[in-house]
Picture: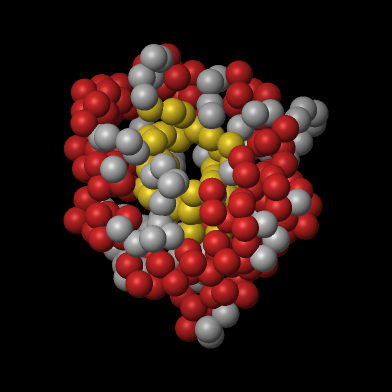
Length: 250
């Protein structure tokens, strides 16, 4: 039985005061969440502070990205050893905003995945199609290509210590959400794709849904057999909303 995971991606949001208020709210209600694993992914500059706030709590911390290189002349990048030293457990890899806005290729995403694992970070590998790709009927081709890039570089066993997040690009921050049935179909495809290489890995891996998940729709999404929780964007900035989503996983 897979343990549900709900991870909050704060994106480019927050200040010291707003983050303290948010974390205080999360800590006050985390005991009511049940068995769901909970994580938050702050901007890089707040990792150390958030780690200190979360000390001895049930909430894990992750980063929103990681550099494919471990050190060197890469101005503006943040490396795996640095992130790990700040107390992060997870690292979001290949989010659609990184792929679309910053032009990250499948190859680069796979290298970032490898970098995260080199330094003890558990990658949350994001995959998903654009609206144009969905309308063309190539959703499965796109998702398979994105997952295969990691498997081809690292081998399927690398997914034993990883999470996959299916995020249809057309549903991120748009208010549009894939129906539970649409989401389940892709999650089942992902699990079956991995099962072609390893049934054991496929059975164990947590596959999250991301894309305008809210308190109002979380329970229906998480009830599907292959949806193991969510990667939450905007709703993770509201403690009450986020905790309600977490409870839906348990």
